[in-house]
Length: 315
Length: 281
Image 1: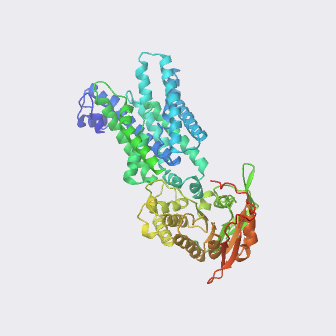
Image 2: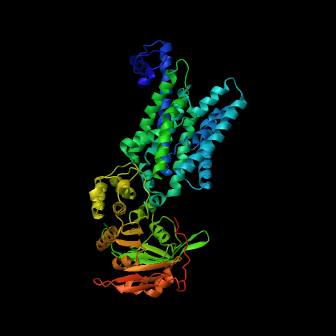
Image 3: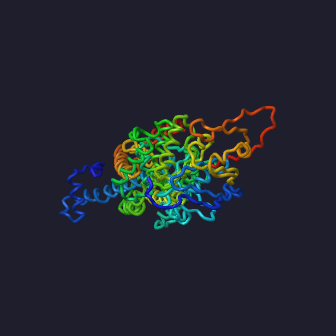
């Protein structure tokens, strides 16, 4: 919550607490209406959205890495985020904002199916093949996103394209926070209970099956759940990359591979990480704002490279 | 590891499984009495792995009947089946950095609920399984740092943590040196003597003959012979199934069959090839 205090308009932690307390009916408003609005209308929802998106992407990363037994799996690298962006952008252009989460989900699901289908057709779901397939799918969906925005040709289409492709939390108000929060509550929390099931996949499908898991049904159900969660998150933030890749690996180094610990701690780490990276994104180049995805990619790219080297060494 | 449930062990009648249009397992009758070690023999591609997968519930066979201690296995729920049958796969591939205790703890999954953690009993069973599999010494190490023999003991401990009545193993001595092979098979023998039913796919016929109570010989998905090793492992059968010439000797101290293979003679007419097919993954 400290992140709420950081920004162009200087605010003390006490001011922030006072504003939050006032809005929760726990005290008298003491701040000027303007400063109060900065806390309650701008920064609070944005920080909460960042936390929800970070947590959700990290959960998606853990689940996908376990189910595909692929250390490089992540909603961004496998194209889900790009697919969700396409769905989101299309309904926004058509002016049907109500359908936003549904369209983003459909886009994410289509991208997931395309990536896995392509990888399978190209000779199996090895980490490298899957990531290459995800790259191809991302490229196509990213281009479609850009095309749709450019074609609809409103005033500032370049900026909007950047926000969808790179991910940005600028303009995340209470509706965005509510959508991301609901996605976490409805899809994210149940996924936290799948730790034991994900553990069972450690030795592959046959072993999972011999441990009493219905493998095809479980995998389909959980992958659809990650698509649903990714869809909802991308609908509010665009395609923020690498959170789902980097955080689970970092947490795994500390707590090991037990999914019952890995899932909640990755979610927590993802939330904290994205809140702080987003705080950096909106303050580093003050008064201009960076799309937060630039910073996550700056951190995630090198980690991705390191994982790639390690995957090559062990395979 | 099994509770003293009365019953006859595994009894399967006319077990079949088709992959595409090919019958990989074709009307197999198989029994593994409680407390016995059965060896599943046959050339590569005979259907041994597939049969073990079918019995473990990994894939669903066509059967006339398939029971474990009198209970129908086909209608048994997956979790319930996983509490009664454990499978040790061939060449298990683990991701990096799993601890041995974590790996053995995976065997508790069929006994655990989604939200609960490890109970005291879970930890006790894991400790006992490590003990029974002679793996307690490396309980604190990483699975990917172990030798092949040590890994196999951990795999065995994971299966025992399921507290099964029937233990299925796919070539458990594969890639092991002779000392580790004997240790693994001796361990299976002891577990069976304690009441576990064991069925292991094996390639070494002499080892199978010295540790198994009975052997089942599979070729092209069909059982060609089954029974006491001394009765089954005869030179004509070995020639027919594997296409090699063998002499059956007797072990000087145990009296068990011991197989000696004649080197292939370049001038002799080639033995009939038993049409090997690739072993399904």
